[in-house]
Amino acid sequence: LKKLSELQHLTITGDYNIDDRVLTCLPRLQSLHWLFPHHSFGDTVSKLTLLTRLSVDNDGYDKCLLFTPISELNLAPLSRLLELDVSENVTFTGDLLSLTKLDVFHKDLINKYTNLIDLSVCNWHGPMCDNLIKLESLRCYNSDISSMVFSALVSLTRLKIKQNYMFENVLRICGTNKDEFDLNQFMKLKALRIPDTSIKISLARLTLLEHLDVSQCSDVDISVIGLTGLTSLKANQSDLSDNALTQLTNLKKLNIKGCDRITKAGILKLTKLQR
Image 1 (tube, rainbow, N blue to C red):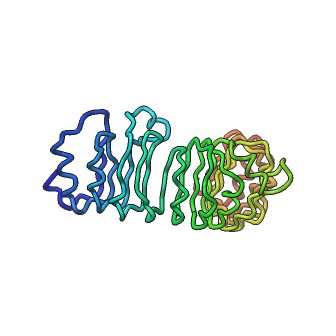
Image 2: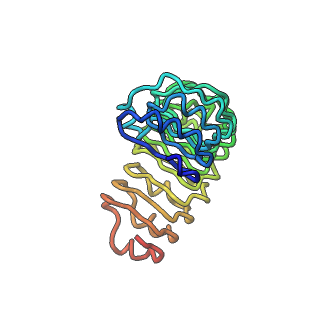
Image 3: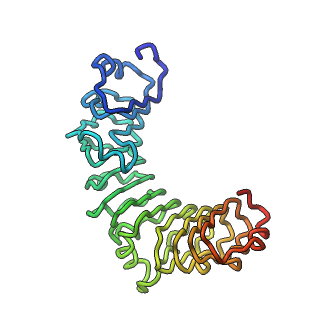
């Protein structure tokens, strides 16, 4: 490992003890920018001052819970850190104001990071800051984000919602009609995934939208009308029909498993379709 002086990306996985000699080598790797450490790395991480990307104890949202917890990481010396991925078993110290990307599990630590461009939250049911105005990409897994926060995300270009715990709060600011999920305020959206829901989804003014996943959603025909810029659509087990589908003339990718209202004739009208 000492001889790999140009090494930039290092991943070590598996539930085993890492030799102390390996840990001693890491700070000497002056070109190392990405590190995905096993939980036993401990204090060594804080010595890697050139790191720009760090993933700790996270092998997927579900698997990460199987690892041994870390009590605390001192990340204060990592002033160049731009991307951080931590599980709910990890706590850290340090004002990482340079962060632009954060993946986190229900922790109240976002308030400082107003430069965030990319944010993932999982199982989050607590308060979050309302000044993430630079945020471009948001992924929410089983999370409930306050209406004040959601309404401030004016720069979003990518939004992925998994499970619908946040819908109730979102509806408070997206319209008075609780039977409608209105996302038209996010006019910069280019990619959108919404969980299966019976709530009507209003997207008419999202003219920049290119990628859409509305699988198992209701009233999909109404939702996609006017979205002629779509190049990718996933609408599995939805009520999408030929009438709405044939208007999406720029589609290149289509997934419509379980859509009984789609016919072969309708698909053949999509001349740009690749798969």
